[in-house]
Image (cartoon, rainbow, N blue to C red; front, top):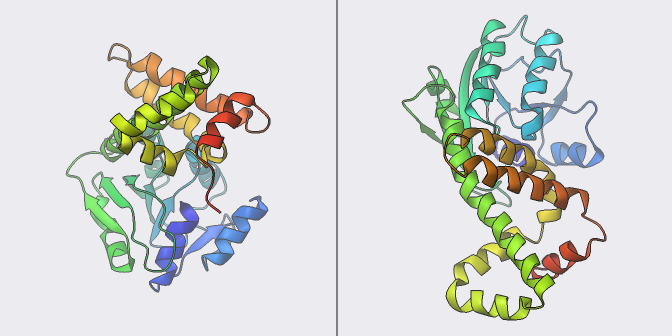
Length: 269
């Protein structure tokens, strides 16, 4: 998502910088393809708006690393946390950032990463006192919707949407594997085609790359577990989905259940 958003912004004429030190070869290639400029951690805050778009489990550690490196001593950009994390985690990050003297906004990204020529931006819901300072990025291709609500609200909205989309993907995957084990997977898929064709179409979009993305979703399910813990069944539901996605991430190669699932929804050529 980060490289895709960077590419959208650079394609619309904005200079975008990024950290590349310690990144994987794949991450470096994506940054280069997006025409983003590599800078050091001490210079990364030399900008007007800082967008944090990282794997959810790394959102807070990135903030702490930036502060520890003195990134905000000379420059005080608007820091926008765009990660799929729980509202209480966003508030904790905001405390770190505002203590460093920066303004802060909470953003929840809803929609897929923009890809290809003429791609549209996902929707950025933004909340907090300084949310309006992100509006100039609308001139460079971002679809921004301001919420008249405090920090944590945009993330709560994003997590609620993710709870449906990634929850549905997890439940569908689980039931296909259950049907495979019971020897009724063909009949099960035929029934879904008759009664839930939209769900099958959803699976065709989401499941082919599930083994590559599941590791990123564990932290989101953990966040949803906390967010839903006061509602009966909520905590255990998302704890179970976190366990499922962790298992998929660990068993990406060679597991029979997972192989059968992915064979139902092959990756496009």
